[in-house]
Image (tube, rainbow, N blue to C red; front, side, top):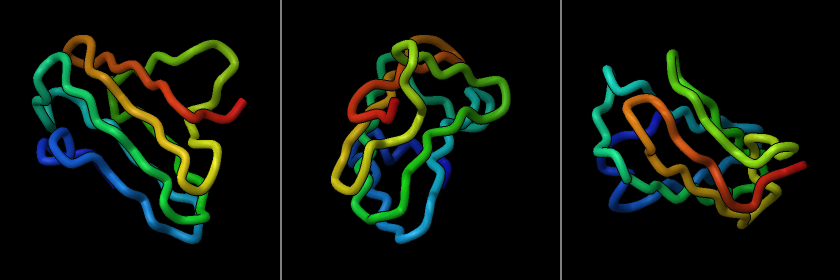
Length: 93
């Protein structure tokens, strides 16, 4: 799934039994305003991975993976600049 402008108001619930990916798109594809925050819920049992689109940088705490810990875990991405986002929340180590 690739994030869309409407996700900033509603968040994203990934309800899959298999591993799935949420992609943060580049500014050229989707122009989220700086400061946008999007919550991602892993509703299903399948691992949810957060991936950077082409040219996007996702910053997170050292040692953490860009994947949610398990079912009903939540994470969020916050846009810092054109193609830089911060990822935080229930992330695997």
